[in-house]
Image (cartoon, rainbow, N blue to C red):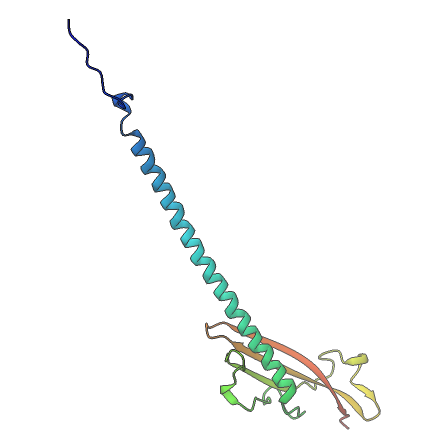
Length: 162
């Protein structure tokens, strides 16, 4: 009689199933690698978006600073026109004090009647007084290359033009 030999333990699986676990694990690792690479690409894109938003906010703040400087320090002269506007005293070297971002502005008198509604519906406020309409066109930039352009109008009450 022939004696049967048995496989010693832990040899319980069928010989055809050996290696299937390795293939499944390799496929799962491939899927996880693809997900990891896609996640890293998304993270890089979101960082770039956040950086661009920050640069735009800094440019916006620089343009707002320019508008404030124009109103506070500009020579509000009715002889300044759009063709010959008032400019900042710092010339092309104007920068915001906190971030150092550059700004520029033009201030001019808009004397065209009816161009914008004046307070109380008219330019004449009382005998000898008039609302003078000025316009500030300001530009701010950030170090990352973002630009913001603003146009702001305001009135100054002064002597009426005769």
